[in-house]
Image 1 (cartoon, rainbow, N blue to C red):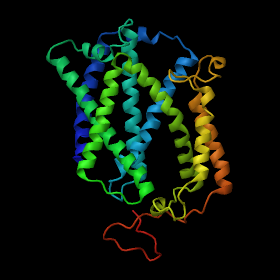
Image 2: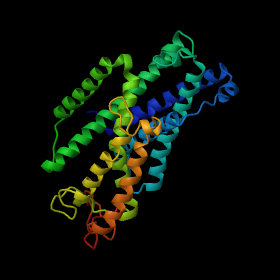
Image 3: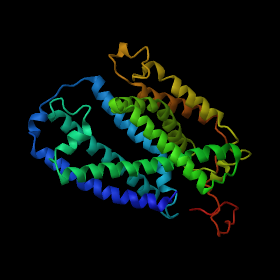
Image 4: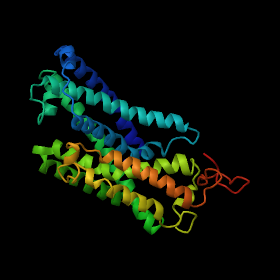
Length: 330
């Protein structure tokens, strides 16, 4: 509604506020607990370990579609390597340090953390103005994420619709209505499930992992091993182009990747028949990453369509085509 630059500006402000709040909370946490004693707690189980790895993996994989939203308006000469490390490192480091804070807080809470996470974290700072500022920083961060989620969801729907209808033009009013519907629906779901929200949200994230993992596996194999970064970008939106309307190979492997995980999934929504035999350990995301990647690599090597000699990008507005007829390279 307000534009991409506004989202970036809000994100920068939220980042500064969030870092200040995190450093303060982490320092308070470290000053109130015996870290050495916490590190002596070594109750290990494969189910808990793989659950933690699954949550960490799902967070990063779910962030994958957002990378395009962050990078689509970067200058054409921006290094792809720098873009990768900026987005990847920011996501990984930010998620992991937050998880470390949560682990230490849960370990020192004597059972008071679960179900009262925000109140407990804010309570580390005491009360009064400091607590109010911390609540504000958390709320402001949520507003930032909700803004990005709304933008991302709108872009996804617009891409899906334009894929079937061709060129899609959306008015400002239609964008506003769509964003309000998405935000209102998400808020309603959160309010209805507020008493068990984090547990349900964790299960939902793990369930989504079953759909994101094979998608990531296929994309990575195709990008790095099959086409080797050589795509005809204009043809992606042309049903009569070199890629056609449907990528039957990719869709078939994706469906296989989702189905092959079902016996190994362990969530509140669904538990596969092989989970108990594995000691209640959820390894579905490993299955969904390895098998589709291997299958797609073998099939794509044999049946993949033509690959252009180099990356073909759309002709930028005001730019002249190159002598070989390809679009100007960014």
